[in-house]
Length: 249
Image 1 (tube, rainbow, N blue to C red):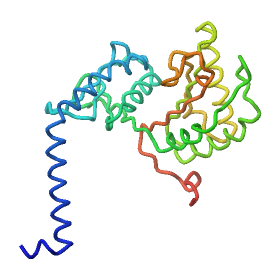
Image 2 (image 1 turned 180 degrees about the vertical axis):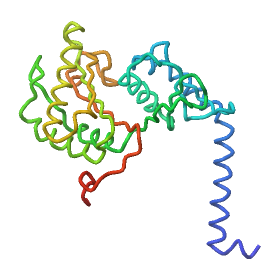
Image 3 (image 1 turned 120 degrees about the vertical axis):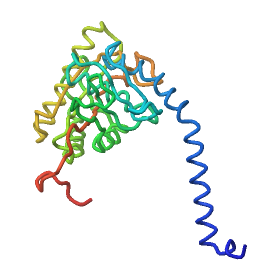
Image 4 (image 1 turned 135 degrees about the horizontal axis):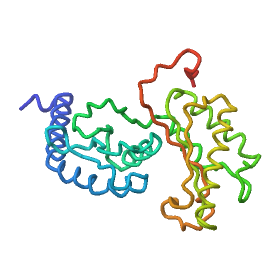
């Protein structure tokens, strides 16, 4: 057993043993893991507007457990709602890539694959510390938010060609129909500001959800629920041109 005393060989054998152990644990827990994801999916699908029309199937075409769901149904829904549903399921911890199917497990319908892009993470990082602010009960942006919009536009620019969803939220201090209208107006104001900064209009989608999706852990009346959120998804592979390729950092 002299060869085991040689550090490189010992390290390699140890790494291989860990790999085998991880594969064994992953295989043994896969059914429970996919079952847990399948149990969580209906609630987020309903909240995103899918109701009883969409189901997330966490199985491969051969019936094996998978963390890469296929979304079945929802054909009458518009593109924006389908995108919201796909993003909501993708946000569940542990979920991998998502495909839509028109009823067949092989997803032969040609539905696009929805993939969250790095731009979304960049924008979320900007908005963790700062907020796009509006005048009270108005869709007019605070002057101080102008520089933040500049930074958001710069973060989105490397992913031109994708679909950018802008969602407005409010707190619950007021009638919900008014909250929904105000949140939509604010999302449209941000859209207009991004267009003014060179983000193509045809890739921007907006929606207002009022107060129905408060920040997790916050009271629905907390003013911090007044916010704008972005989701960035790709429906086709993006090949940046020299014009929109980001410069070295």
